[in-house]
Length: 450
Ligand code: GUN
Ligand code: FE
Image (cartoon, rainbow, N blue to C red):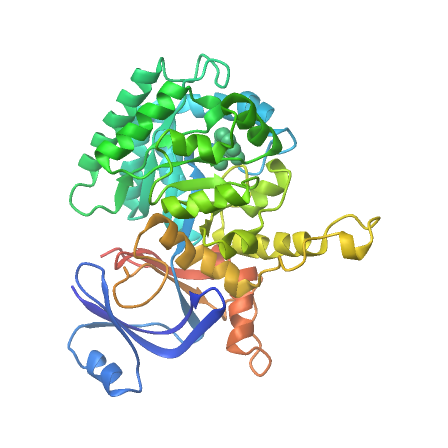
């Protein structure tokens, strides 16, 4: 059924532009597509309200924002969220992460974790997620089913990894051909699970170059060409990963991935903290993008991603939680963290250095820029029409109760302008303030799903 939503909208059509529409009327067709957005006081707005479509009037003191796009989630790491982050990445993977991920071959273990994760992320306002699942085909399909069932927009990837040194023998593909074959099977299964709506789609997922042989990486690049399915992987995350690629391939991780045919339109490169300017230009030329994971990077990346520098070179970028490398499931937290770490990069961190040589001036971003990354930026990386409440976009939206007193957010009449209220949403809103979530026009949190 088509419907019309009346709401106070806050969103960021550009990285430097906060748009507040005090009394928006949003028309959504029966397929979940936004067909019009007009102020209610105009003739166009009134005619939408009089169109006879079902009406949803959001309560006073609520704010409707676009759904959040999480570009990087390790679904099987959900049970370890918040733990184990004192180890370096290589030890964390082998000692903590791989043993947990291997358990999902048991579907009785996997299924309840998957539905709890999808439900948890939706309640944080994540309407689109790009998931790394596990090596197991059936467990990956079960995650796709959980997303379909809960109504979350998702890109679900079977993790491909076969390198005899970069993976343990009890959690890897048996060979490169076997890995390519299992990824192809996983794609076919996921396409069949959501054949009708396409809300949940497969994504080809080589874990990262240290975990994959050349033959596997090449085979997956060919699979991406033959199927047209998107790709996601990690790229130059840490000093270790960056130097590893230089030693193994004689070139950067980005160049190596490109040589295997994996840098394509819509490819999501997680982290990418150590990419060079030449890498950045190549990423832009190929139409790939970066998932900036600011909190995770503080633990594993050895550096702060230079958001402004990369975006200045035209690189597409959105945000990722990197559950569980980052210890928060909230993309709003990531937006706040993106602001925070950009300030650290700008100012520098070592007080024993003179201020003029301490940081990288011109690196700071504000909450508007960070929210743009969390919405429009993420949608652009995935080439999906999400992240903005505007005609031609899908109706993926999150309703915040700005008067809720259950969380940390408070709005003081007479003190807080709309701009300040927006800043408070980005920095302070959490699940207790989120009273409604819609994906593709369907309400998935805070009401009876229709
Ligand atoms: N590199 C390879 N695998 C992973 C992972 O699971 N998390 C992070 N942060 N980096 C990785
Ligand atoms: Fe990751």
